[in-house]
Length: 199
Image (tube, rainbow, N blue to C red; front, side, top):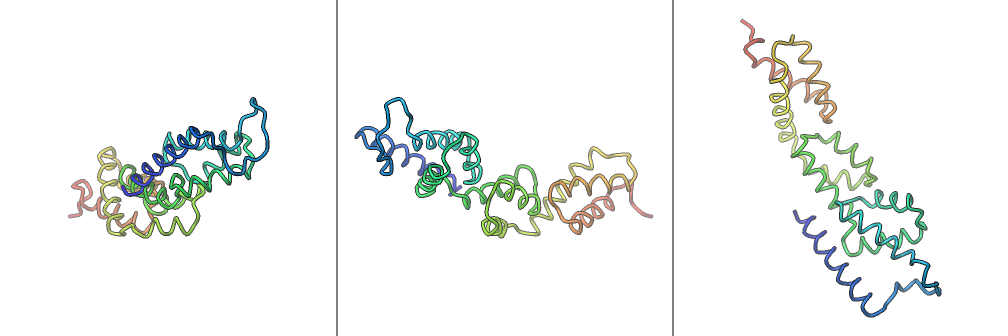
């Protein structure tokens, strides 16, 4: 929650600073060249793109860089704008990674393996990913796997044990659980079912 509060406060600070600069007629310090009135300021265009993206939801720096590149923004302008956004706390990969891990664990039951892969795909630096995943409790992750298996087993009544095992293992693998955790949790769940009780 602290990451969301920081992001909200930073957005408000940036909006106030932009309104103040606009009211006093100030332009970015590096915009020294004279532009015609019809040529848009590239910094303002880049800022607008970034703010529009952030208004839709948190983004990593890499995602914003990609969006600016897609819109043909000059790489130097993009870097300056993103650096400024990072200074005011609007672009913060650490806060993003922590929030993403917490959210996806709670809503989708993703394990560290899947979370690592997703954060890498979004361009988060490896050390930031490691830091965000450090807080994952292995026992909590195992309990999440148990809950996922119990829920999924409700849809598999009447299937043979081998079929259930195979489907559950694939399901947990897609969620990022290791084979060791998966098979232990699956075995425990299936052994507890009346249809698989051994005499």
